[in-house]
Length: 252
Image (cartoon, rainbow, N blue to C red; front, side, top):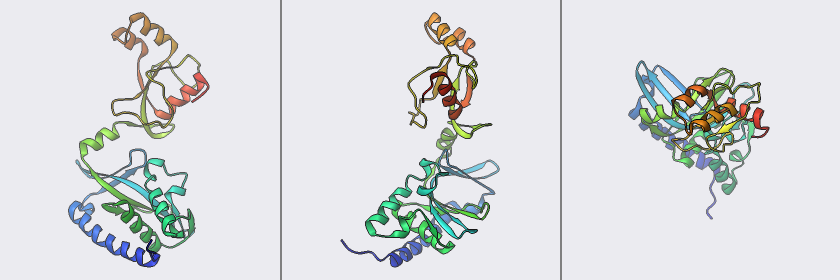
């Protein structure tokens, strides 16, 4: 197997990223948009101005701390959700095959130039279409690789699967009857067996109801106007759903 020199490879990736980013900027003109927002739960990076919106899928490469002068790969960051750091495991495996310790150590002393090198390498290894670095927060630079453009309708369908919870912030939506709560054990019936963080089919949602609702449903023989009125379905977040399940069933 041909040996790859890390410094030469990193420089080539940076040069390629400069060309790639020029083409990406020419096509999408991100500077035109007034606002930006990225969400780990949805995996979407959104730019907007007034009613105009532009959406992409992304993953988080890692972060550079200006305060500590350290780089941390997102695969080593417990605060980063799995769905936006899964692709960085490809970079780690590439580093293991190539014996590049900078790609396999989770957190170490570094600088901003290297942070861009790592982002360039991540873009090359994962065939990204561009990169983005949001505005610094508390001297922390976050580096994102953009993987694909997402049509606004598709993006909205993804966003509609999430809700802003007062307790747990931004989580997937779930539906429970009006009687289920965080303090009372009143039974927990589900539309199908669930587990936290499980993948759902596009048409599926977490749905649960209490014992009383189950009695009414069985009496009616189905979910109809009467049983639905009794249940008084309400919207909650996924985390709230599984807290209620834990309370009633004692397991997840």
